[in-house]
Image (cartoon, rainbow, N blue to C red; front, side):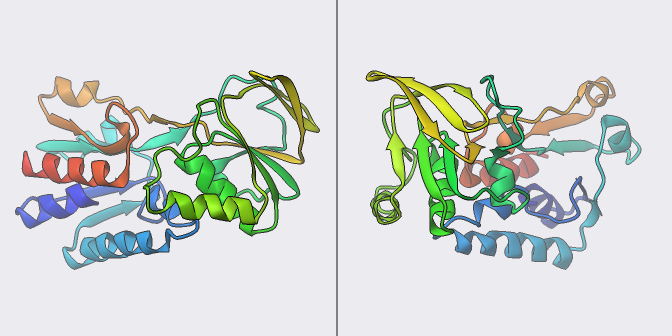
Length: 249
């Protein structure tokens, strides 16, 4: 949306394709965890700009290179985002194993004893949300710190909330398997088995791909921005790349 906004203000005719029926992408789930509601302001602002600038929105349309060529573009900005990684762990395909992004998007609702695999920002925020909703939550993280990417001002609040809700935390711990009733893991103290009703996966994101070869063969300039460019990052990175790409046209 930022790329579309800037391109339109520079005088270009802009068509914005979006496979979902709403705008905002990952911001819609990023705004769900505790203390993150204000991020909705970004969605509201940019969505309003799309309307105010009369940008041609094509919502609910999965797009391919041929669809784009039909628009006869001079330039194309690819901002197709990322996806939540499903790790290669035995048992990941069991029905009680959920996706953190779908949990935040209210598509899946775990309850009871929940183990979150991955203690990065998404995993920690998902764990905090579930704990506030009454679940008995455990976080299992391979690295030595939970929510390492969180700001130094917010992280103490999150840790205090974990303590208040009894969130258990295992660091330097590798998950070895998921069973119908437990999560099996290993750390320096040896093997451990954690009873659970649900497991939530939050081990990171990988860029979505979009085949641009047909566009490049036609000599169309292509810019790849945001989470689909190299590696998934954060909102500041994504919006900045969209801004810079539109200014480069």
